[in-house]
Amino acid sequence: MNRQLMHDAFTTMQTEIEQAQRLIQQDELIKAEEIYHKMLEQEKDFPPALHGLSVLANKIEEQEVRENLLDRAIQQIKETEDRNQKAVLAIWLTEQAEALIKLGRQDEAKNCIAESERVIKENLS
Picture 1 (cartoon, rainbow, N blue to C red):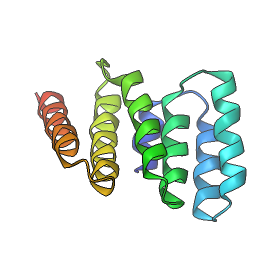
Picture 2 (picture 1 turned 120 degrees about the vertical axis):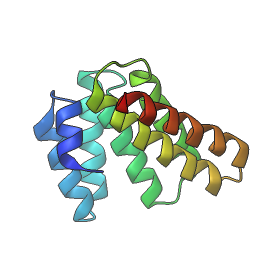
Picture 3 (picture 1 turned 135 degrees about the vertical axis):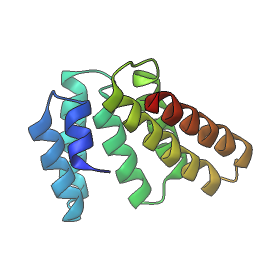
Picture 4 (picture 1 turned 180 degrees about the vertical axis):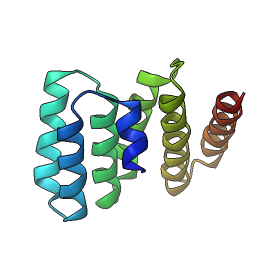
């Protein structure tokens, strides 16, 4: 995901988000996971932390966990009016669709894609 977009969408805990993202790129998954859990201790259901954990779940092929974490993150920003968060929401819905496809849940995946398209169109108007 575009770092600038994440930065613009979520202004709190930027240092932690960026540090965890760097650790993931370096395959330091356990350290990244620790950072995300500390973020969740500070702010329950913090969307970037939930999304970060979903990235980790994807790396270890835990699609059910990934889908659940993405759903929780999506629920936190679903009603946002912030254009940056709407852009993030559209991306996360697409990622959730990918997890659902891997789980063999195509109909649910189609719904996520349709919702992502709706959010994109709404964000463009």
